[in-house]
Picture 1 (cartoon, rainbow over the protein chains, first blue to last red):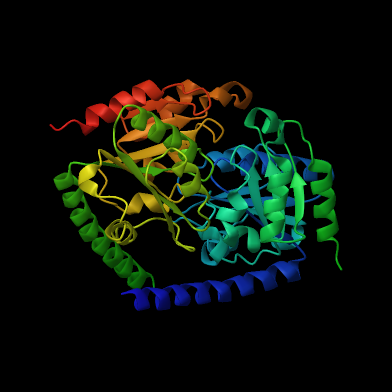
Picture 2 (picture 1 turned 180 degrees about the horizontal axis):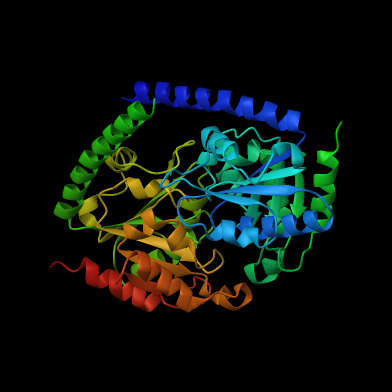
Length: 223
Length: 223
């Protein structure tokens, strides 16, 4: 059975890669910067994204978000409070988003036209493992890690950190009560993905958001 | 392709269920209480388990642990400090433990004989989704959730909470800085799994450990 599973897994990932390549082409033609946000459940992706959407809107940028969860539309409702167009993808038991789900939800999203957007954020299902195998056509994959989770996560989940373009440390306002060892966390992230851009943020205090927004603006600029 | 995937997934789960049934029979014959600990990465499974192993040892009970991670043996080394026999299972990219991995690691574990144990803890890979589909032959599945992760996790990951026998809230020492809404968390857990036993704990202060240890002793008693 193992050989069949490996073959089938290859087939699924190959199909996903083809769809993702199509998405990437669409995103590039439309001139929209697409980011795929991946982390554990509870890292604070939604709070970080809500703050990002509000700040981009305040600066006159056009941003939208797709948000993946097994169940509930809690996150979409939270994010919609930012004023940005937001669409929930419920995976009903599937542990990651894939390119087919993203394609489908973009195709019939009447509220949004890619060409009018500067940024599209895709908040993945909370999971440090499975989403790293599924390309969604994004230009930037962001791995998020909160100070409450422990400094060793990059070493224990190397697949995600190794495939990411940026790392965001969240909840730094909790560093002291959590006894967070910042140097060790930075060292571990760099060990898996040397030279990766790292942002140290708090959605509560807005720490680190200026650097993050400057990075977004820089990445969105036509080269 | 979808039909083939569903069929193959059924086949994998069926094979896992058969192996898990075999494990359950072995565990029952040996008189060992087996618990499968499941949570997000960073919930504090290892700290909670280390404290549990130390306390059981101090009470003269015999406990051992199998610990699953994609990579590294950090957790096994941390747990071994308790003095209990501990064995690391590295899944190398697989997002959950399955009954085959548990069987294999028990079969050639020279240090441990099941018949000599009162308790065997299986610390699963950090993932709130995939482990819930894989029976490991445990008698008690424990879903852990830290106060840093947000009160909505049971609603967003119902598969795990619905298949669990006990829920452990961890890191309650961080409730205040995290603004944790205890009543809401308890309500959400009970909404998914009415009447489930819930323990509110802190590995830092040892809060809730007495209740947890009393529960373990009660469950381990031959009925």
